[in-house]
Image: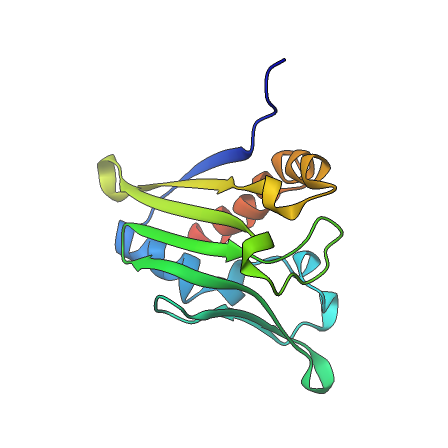
Amino acid sequence: MPQEPDSISHEVTVRLSPSESFRLFTRGFGSWWPSEYTWSGNVLESIAMEPFEGGHCTEEGPHGFRCDWGRVLVWTPPQRLVLTWQIGPHREPQPDPEKASTVEVLFRSEDAGATRLLLTHRDFRRHGKGASRYRKALAGEAGWAWILARYEEAAHA
């Protein structure tokens, strides 16, 4: 019996240099990340990642609400970014990094000053029960495809 895949991949091409693309994805994260993919929703005050290995990926909402949703594992501008994804299958915070999946983003130079962004979300099995459904949801149209469409919109604005 074949084993179910444990990763998903998506890619987009934007009309930015790799440095600009990396900067928008990381330092400009709050300008394009959809609030629908946060705990705070439409009252989100900020979402960001600290620009170094070991940095926190954090959301801030009203009344001092703060939630760390990941950690920066690899920070290699402008080529590569790797994060823990510490959000469980039921959208609950997952403080244990051993139960987190991993998101890797590669930024590849293309012709005419464009960059191809390749995103791989792997290690879904670490999420335990519900991991398969979670992977399928993030692989669907309302998952990474939709999230990266927001990134493309910001890059081309």
